[in-house]
Image (cartoon, rainbow, N blue to C red; front, side, top):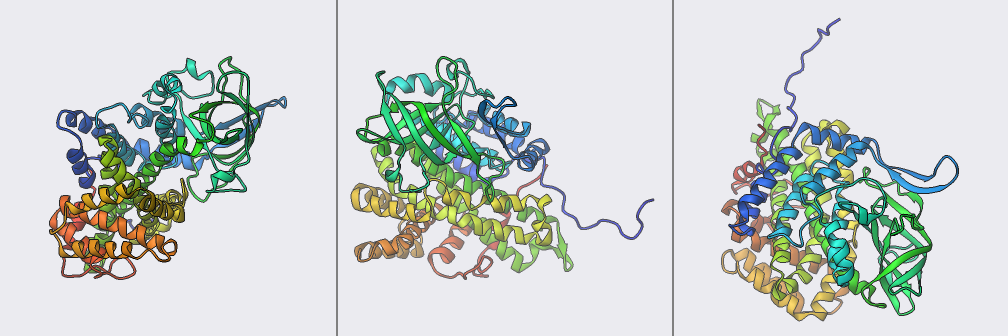
Amino acid sequence: MAATTHTVTNQVPPLVGHDVFATDRVLSEAVERHVEPGVLPVALEELGELGRAAGSAQAQEWGAQANAHPPVLRTHDRYGHRVDKVEFHPAWHRLLGHAVSAGLTDAWGRPAGHVRRAAGFLVWTQAEAGHGCPLSMTHAAVPALRTDPELAAVWEPLLTSHTYVEGLRNPHGKAGVLFGMGMTEKQGGSDVRSNTTRAEPLSGEGAYLLTGHKWFCSAPMSDGFLVLAQAPGGLSCFLVPRVLPDGTRNVFLLQRLKDKLGNRSNASAEVEFDGTWARLVGEEGRGVRTIIEMVAATRLDCVVGSAALMRQAVAQAVHHSTYRSVFGGPLIDKPLMRNVLADLALESEAATVLAMRLAAAYDADTEAERAFLRLALPAAKYWVTKRCTAVVGEALECLGGNGYVEESGLPRLLREAPLNSIWEGSGNVQALDVLRALQREPQALDAFLREVGKARGADHRLDAAIKGLLTELADLDGVEGRARRLAERFALVLQGSLLVRWAPPEVADTFCASRLGGDWGAAFGTLPHSLDLASVVARARPVAD
């Protein structure tokens, strides 16, 4: 019998069937800005295809399924033999396969490869963020392996392949592989130099046996891992394959999967090494130096991934407010909601512009840009990832009770949001890395000041913020206790300078007035009411087909 008590009205249509890339003006402008003209048409075409796929009902369903059916650990087969494998829902493999085929593990050898990959990562992970971990690890392993040309010649073509091959077998018989990483141990956490895993050399050149553990092992279903262990010459980096060249399984004992707050579709494991075969990467005793470029590349992905979460949350909030009617008119037209949405959109735009500028620095690969990254990257990783949780939480509130319901997708985004601030060094680690760059590499500060100086004179609030930052740096007493404050100021000044140069005047004006000029409250929705907030919101609207 049909219900007759009410009809369904004033409900927002789902945000589906749109081009996630093309409707993101900030991202598409960044790609056009940072990709050279000869490569741009190809980049726009591939990102358009990825954007339409990311906005499709199919991709959204894959994301929901992958999170509703998290990975399962199988330590033994039915006969009691150890198998140590992780089983994933088919939707996970479809998401990962699409990402690999789109080149999201291939940046190091393509023209404008880092900008194209970062843009693709930002677009595709909006469909589902959890599978970004193996994409990031695989992409980031390349610079570490390049410290050993012999290893790089074998592994790099497989890591950068556009072919996803599911399952474990001899990697040299596969068309493409995935990599993970293991650094953290129970007793040390971020203090990797306290690692106790031992590496004993064998007679074969570069071969070792590992004994020990990793408390967090990323992407345990991968074909290979870069891990740190104590060799006779000190802490060193090793490549640990899951399957050995003769086709037998390496000793890689998966103890359990972490039961995490978010990132549910992705597996993070505790692993034990007990006579595990490994190949030295780089020199003994230089493990941190060898693996640090991998860490840096994954930190950039933390920034990009947070920008993706923010963009998706803001897009959902603006979309909802466009179609929802309250108190006699569209919610988006209400002055107070417009203020909230503009504030959120501003944070999202600043994150995206900064992430893409960092990716462009990787593509330039000059000494000046490398120096710039040494300071800008930890500052950006500190600030953007911290802002992510606040942005997603406020965007959820824009949907009211509907946003608190799982079907809206916002709870999944909110659970995911804190991850990037913790992964690859939490806030204090990033802030201390900013100090380390200042103290050990004066060229890093010079490069940073040259970058922000390109906007000097264009906005008096930005000029004052740069001066204030220099004043902070002139007094280094108790600097460690002020490290977070410094990291925040570096990030805000950099974001402000980029927006002044590249964003529409209403966006740059609003950012400088609030984030740099102090005309802002302690919560979102407290922007100066006299600014052109409607234009800021309109710029963030995702236009559905």
